[in-house]
Length: 587
Image 1 (cartoon, helix red, strand yellow):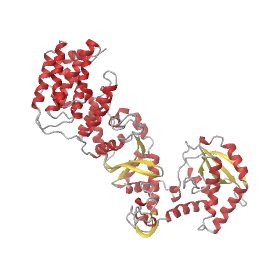
Image 2: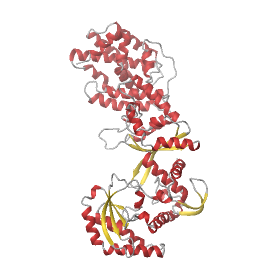
Image 3: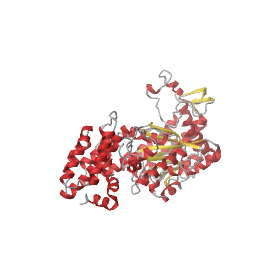
Image 4: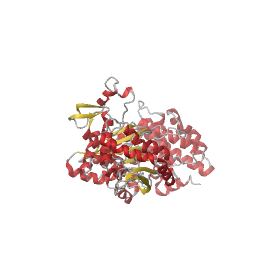
C-alpha cells in the first residue's frame, strides 16, 4: 500500500513537473481561511515597516506563502501562520519564527544576518503592526492567515526563505536518521535514510512500545526507514489522496489508493477518473439509486468501468490527536470485483425496485449496539463485513442474524403497527445481496418440494432447509391472522404469543396449533390456509433433528415470513384474493 502511495506521488510529480519545494508546501484551504493578512516591509535594507494589507487567500498559487505546520505552540517552518488569537499568533508564530531562528547555531552567517535585520525591523514596529493587524482582524473566527511580504515579493520569491524552508524541514528529519541503509519503500541502499519521515503517522516514537532497537529513540529509524526521494513522493502522494481521493463512508473516513499494474497509459486513464472533479457530475447525472452508497461523490460506479490493469486499496483511518490509526486496509480490489458487486446489487434491486439496495442498509444494523450511545461501537464489525464484500470472503450468517434481530426486536417492541416492517425489509435485502455475491454458506441437504418453492428461490434468504422454510411459512400464516384481528378488532392481541420475537424451538412448534385455533374462531381457516398449515407441518416433520438453529435465526426466518406473506398469499389465492387478504389489515 505504501509503495502504491509512492507511485501515485511520483506520477503527479512528473505530470505536474513539480519541484521539491512545492511538495513540501502545504495548501491553505481558501474556503476556510479566505483572508490573508500581509505584514509588508520594504524590499531593501533597512527593511522598514510599510503597512499591513488584506488580500484574498489564493488557492491556485498558494505555494507563494511557504506554509507548512510544525509544532502546535511554536513557530511553523516559515513566518506564515493561521490566526487563532491575534497577539498570541503574532508573538509565537510570526515574530517567534525569527526569534527561534536566531537561536539556530547551524544557520549560515549570511542568512542569519539577513533574518536578524528583518527581526529588528519587526520588533521596532511591533506596536504599530499589531494595532493595524487588530484593525483588520475584527473577528478571529472568520478565518485569517498572517504572512510576510517584502515590497511586492512573497516568501516564495525570496531565496533566503526558500533555502531555509527546505533546510529546516530536512534538519528536523536528521534527528532520527542513519547512513548507508536500505530504504523500506524503494528497497535500495541510500546514503541517508530518515526514521520519522513518513507522512502517515501510523505510529509515534515518543512511547517506548513503538520504538525498535532496545527502546533507543536514536535507533527508531529502523521502524520505517525512508530515503529523501521516497519521502517527497510519499508526501505528494498523500497530498493527492487528501485532495482528490478522500471520501466519507457512513461515519468513517477512507482514502482510495490506486495500484497500477501495467504501463503509463493505464495510469493516465485511471488518474483522469480519480482526480477529474467531473466524476461527481458523472454519479449525479445517473440515478442516485445506481450508487453503492448514499453519498453523492460515490466514485465506485465509475471505477467499476475501468479495465483490470489497476487494483485499488481502501484505507480506513481515524485521526487521534497527532497520530492516525488504521481501522482497515482492503487491498487489491479489481474493477472486475466492483462489477461483480454492482451486478449483485442490480439483481437485489430487481426484487425491491421501490427501495434500491445500498451499503447503508448494512450500516443501519452495524452502527450502534444501543441508540443511546454517543459513538458508533460496531465499526469493527461493519468494516469486517465491508472487507468480506470487497474481498469475496464468507460472512457468517449466525453473526448477521443476531445483529438483524437486535434492531428488528427494538422496532417490533417500540414502533407503531407494522413499522418494524421497514427494518425487516432492510435485513432481507442485506441477506439477498450477500447471498447473490456468494458470501453466505448454504446447507447441503434435500428439501421437500412445495408449491412455495418459487418464493424460497426468489429471495435467496438462506431458506435452504426444511425447518427454515417451515418457520418462514409459519410467519406468513401468523401474519394473516394478525391482519384479520386488526380488521375485526382494531387490535392484535395474538402478537403477545410471539414473545417479543425471542421464541425458542418449543415456542415455534407450539405456535402452529394456536394460530389454527384462532383462525377457526374467526371462521377464517379456509382451505387455502389449511393447505398452508399442512405444508408447514410437512416441512417441520421433514427437518433433520441434528439441525440446530439459534433463537435469533429462527425468529429471523419467522419475521421474514411475516413480511413476505403477500407472496405466499398470491400463490394461495391469486391476484384478486391476495389483494383482499392484504387489505384485511388496512385501517
